[in-house]
Length: 366
Image (cartoon, rainbow, N blue to C red; front, side, top):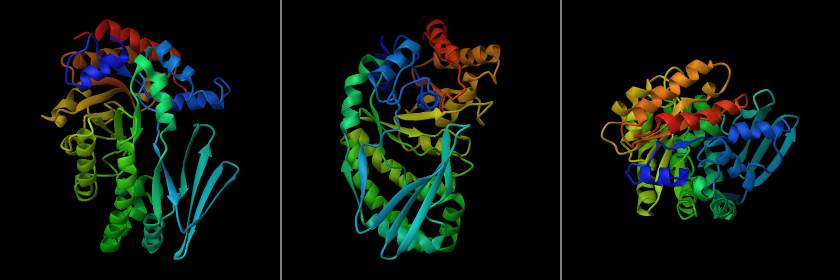
C-alpha cells in the first residue's frame, strides 16, 4: 500500500498492511533553506514531496491557512528592524502593536510583545475583530492536491479557538489570565466577537480542497487545564468537528505538550485524530498509557516519536529501542499513526528519518 492508502484506511477505521508513518518536516526543511542546503521555494515545490518519498515519510502537514484576513476601518503597518518583525494596528478607539523576534541559532521566532497587553486593550481588540472579514485563499491547496499524489493527504488549518488564539499569539498567558479573572464579562465579550469572525474563516477552511482539517491549538496542559478548556474551548471545537464531519472530511487537533491534564477532555470532543502526541521521556505520559486516557473515543492516536530522538542528543540504541517499543503497541490495532511529536528539529539527522521507514517495514506489520 502507498502512504496515502495506509492513512485513508486507518481514517476509515480499517486495517492497512503497515502502521502508517507520517512526519512533519517543515521546521527541519526551513532550517535547511536558511543554511543554504535547500533552495528558496523548496517547501512549496514538487521536490518537497519527492523528498518525503525519498525519505520514506508520509506527507500531511504544511501549516497552511486557506483564507486571508482583511482589516477594515483600520490602518495596518508592518516593518522589520534586524531580527524583529513588527505589526501595528491603528483603530478609531486606539492602537495595538506586536513584535516577533527571530532567533538564528534556533531557526525560529517568538513573540516579545503582544497586541493585547492588558484588559485595557480589550475595546481595541474587539474593534479589530468587529471590522475583520475573511476571504478564501485556495491556490496553494489546489497546488498541493496536484503535488501530493500517493505520498499523503492535503491538510488545511481552521483558526485556533479564540481563547487559544489570544493565549498563544495575541495576548499571552499573563494578560489572558488577568483579563479572564478581573474583567470576565468584557473578556467573554471579546471571545464572542472573535468567534463570530473566526466562524467565517473556519467555514472557508471546511469548504477548501483540503481532505483533512486541523484546529492547530498547540495545546499543553500546563497552560490550559480542564477548567479553562471546558469554559472557553470545548464548545468551539465540538461545533467545528461536527461541521467537518458533516462535510465528509476528517478533523485533527494538534496537542503536542503535556497530556495528562487534558488528553481525556480532548478525546471527548470527537476529533478524528489527536495529533503530535509526545510520550515519555519527553512528555508526561508513557506511550502505553495514551489509549487509557483516550478511552472509548474513536479518535486516532497520532505521534509517538519526540523530535529530539532524531538528533544525536539521543543515542542510536535508545532511538531504535523507542521506535520498536512504540510500534509494538501500534501494531496491535489500527488506531495509531506513527508520527513526529511534534517536528524533526533543525539538528535532525537524515539517517534517523530514513531509519524509521525501515523499522516500520520490519516491526510495523499488524
